Amino acid sequence: GSGVNGAFLDSAPTGLAHNNRNSVVSGRYIFEVRNGAPPVGGEVSGYIFRADTQGALPGAIVAACTNTCNTTTANDAGFYSLTGLPVGDYILYAYPPSADVILRPHQSEPFHVSEDDHISNKNVTLQIADLPPEGTTFSPNRNPNQAVPFIAWHSPTTMSEVSPSGLGSIFVEVLQNGQVIATFSLTETSPGVPPGMSTYTGVMPDLFPHHGWVRIRKHVGNTIEEFDAWIDPSGTVKTVGGSPVVGAAVTLYRSDSASGPFDVVPDGSAIMSPTNRTNPDLTDVNGHFGWDVTAGFYKVRAEKAGCVSPTDSQIAFVETAVLTIPPPVTDIDLRLDCGEPPFVWGNVDCADGIKPLDALLVISNAAGVGPGVSSPAIVCPDIGATVNIDGSDRQWGNVDCADGVVTTDAMKLLQHYIGIQVAQTVQGCPELGAGITLGSP
Image 1 (cartoon, one colour):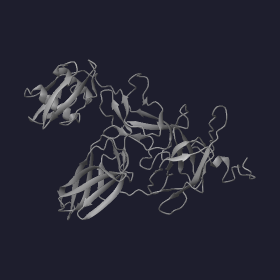
Image 2: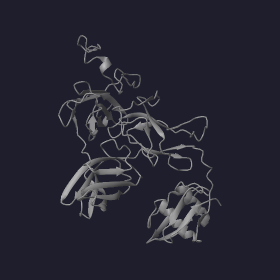
Image 3: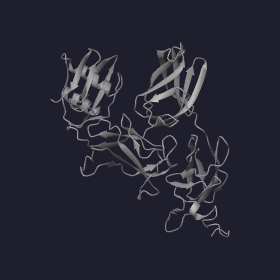
Image 4: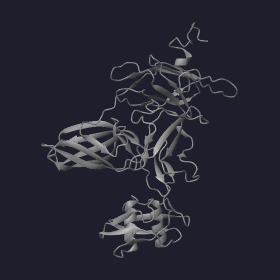
């Protein structure tokens, strides 16, 4: 018992119905049984505050994680307590509840918990995200209605800025943990619109393998402006041929246990970070979807009218296996059969009889493999070998597989690698101004 009369009643703030253990559901208590005995171990407790008012943050979700996570929810006073923690090194995570301002989740430095530790006053203050200034936009932006830019991995992202005319360009840095991870420039594209102002535009480089929270730093004339953004690595929905499925409904499910049951995460729930609290959500123009979520066990389901599971046409959706968070899950690849013609390996021809090597140049560009870059891990599906794409100064090297595969097979491999279907896409031959069609043999 609690030792306090009425402490567990629903009418009391400390009542069992108002708290939880190892769950995000109020009134649910999960106790691990280890070697036939109830859990014993250390305890971590404290308060969750918000930076703007220094007030308590009831409803914040808190998790202490080592190989597994122990999760709870802060009570009406913002207090949390995590008990029965096995000996080990932990990271404390705190996630904001639904709020009218954007609060950033917190991740602590590692700390040690011993068998009899009672670590109190492990307080956390959630910081408010700095939002982009008016006139700064990103495209595509996973959730343009959300205040923090939500930018996808591997997705060319255009940043636009309205600033005074005549600056020429605006230098932009992307920082993570205080370190610059990328730079690019915005150039003046629409001078004098509106009067005295101009639109400056540039393409952000792919930030892979970095993901999570970043700072965007703009050098506008003699002024430096900074704001937060979220780089999401979650995943995409594609057809079996590799084309993005735009507007697919993706639904996030969660459980307190890897064995389930799994329930749909309610739309707007604090289980999802404020960067995206929409569930179900829709994939963007690149088929991308993503959420930043609290610790737990998840599944993602994708569906779209007219599409079915590639393995069973009677099932109108595809679903991931169980996903354990943390660590972050990256590059989820969900495939739907949307009635495309079957993929057929094909030759690559240009209208003016362009040489095979030039055709390889075009496909390699589309694959995102640049001069001087080697990609030795691509498998030749027909022969089980690997291929390297090497070269420099626009003079691309030959594409060879370990057993001497012929050029046509190399073309087939690259065609498959970039997910282009037969007769679906026409690319330009940049060196000759011609066009190529990926067609059947």
